[in-house]
Length: 405
Image (tube, rainbow, N blue to C red):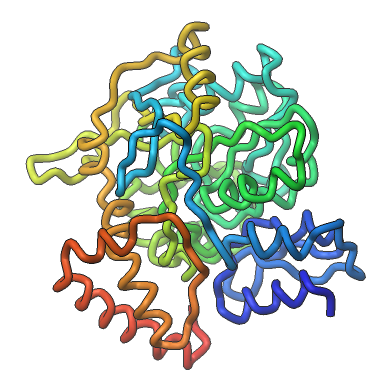
């Protein structure tokens, strides 16, 4: 067995795989497929074809092994939402792009502008499969029309880094935070002279593909029924889960689709993620929800607005240039208000050390995380730390022994 495949085997045995696809760039004999649980996992498609330095890159960049925080010089430190050099509320000035996007279309507008201005030759991302829109696949975006077609969130497994074009010169990449952290760690060795622009979004985790099929079946579209289009978010804000099958259109609101069906199936690796806020990206986007009197997000339909955070000087330059070009509107973002509007992200980071220790005590070893303020956050509320540790242990122990995820 080769070094990369041994490492892949260990990550899979610990159920720590994020499904990013990095390993398929290091060993061309690997491919990503859905496993029995409905998650994207590497499988041996042919004999090993490792690139030079594959084992070293795997050990330093695979998010199932290790994730490092990547603070930018002169960044403002935020223990809950990550470092930043600029923060705004943003929206696409093009009404078509704003309507199509999950939260204001600012990221989609930047994609289109990067391509039209020649600042990027292509964007590696994800979109619905043209052959089977129930599934999400890696795509290469080269035109505004393709950027528009890929707009909106996809709450399903996809291994964006399994697209080999991610390494081509002149690329930008929009992907989940775990994929971006992997590429940030690997790119000095994979693309030393032309590192891609890294774009991401706040991520609550990757649900099982089975959850999409379950949601469709609950709405009256059985597994055998063909689906001609499917989107999870967008076409309004926050947008409705919507699918078309023959002459029939079915839909569900965000709280029902994500809250009741999709969200509960997120893979275990996502539940011990240190970086759902895209700390390794140049630019990260998020929902800038309005909040109620308790401070909780309100999912009422309206014109979308994105939180737009530049993590690096490179990202800040892109955001400001896009605003100067008139493709996005900007206004100042209150990071404290954003933290209130994103309780899943802030609570996950506050309690992550307890979850990690509870999981480890129950026999499930999480990846190694470096540079994150997990100890300081845990120390601020020791009583909750103990409660979360015990609860995690009680959930993980029987699941580990039964082989469930």
